Length: 149
Image 1 (cartoon, helix red, strand yellow):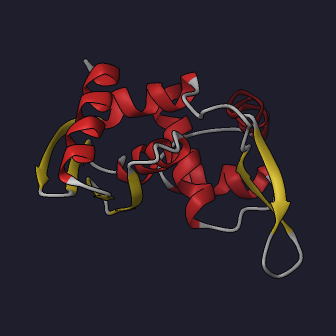
Image 2 (cartoon, one colour):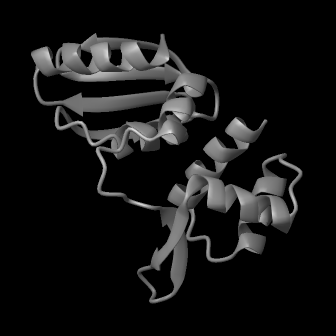
């Protein structure tokens, strides 16, 4: 349950400009996660979220961007828990996820900062990654396979 809640938090902060723990708790409760402000506070600490300036000058939650390569334990867990399958079409990698997990898995892949990945977009259960070349697509599939299997 905690892993799914963490994945939903990542999805929500990427989708909305969430400023407070109470606001995040409201979004989670609307999504079916029964949480208190104390639970959200622990989740924020566990996920190492930080506040960054939003476009309107206010603050919003975001994933802390560390100087590491981005292969954090949390991202690996989200990728493992959400991943269903993948297939390639030339330099495009299509990843299928558990319903509702595509945005979180996509955020995890983006956080890994693999230079082969030009960019990615997510729906509800599908991610499309634009990869630099066919050979790079095979390399990325191998990296993902090593994480999820």
